[in-house]
Image 1 (tube, one colour):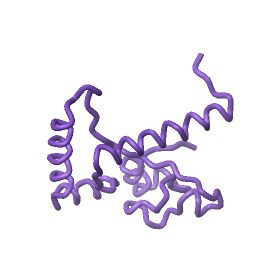
Image 2 (cartoon, one colour):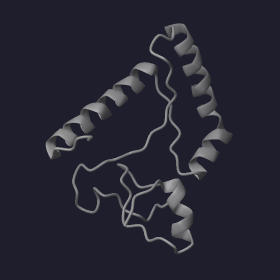
Image 3 (tube, one colour):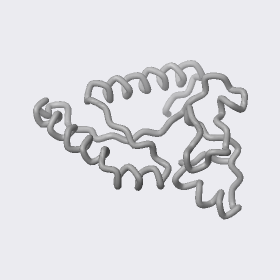
Length: 123
């Protein structure tokens, strides 16, 4: 048993080399629409989603961050880019720098609480 990304697992599943039990995202993967989510399998509220983003050094001037964000958002809105990302199993999306920071902070809080609750620590 293992866990992998939809984009890396889908070809192996299609070739019959892997059998998908569930996806960890909140919604079913467009690459594997017949594979249920973990939540659909009975683990209420389970969601472990993959995201990618562009980060800059903390001291980057806000005007530069805004310019980079606008450029990346424009690229992500391109229909060809969106199609390519979907074909690879990604859900194209963009956000503001503040929204992205909020999401990162929420993940940090979530995984900090989880690691503390199970006593996980780095040795």
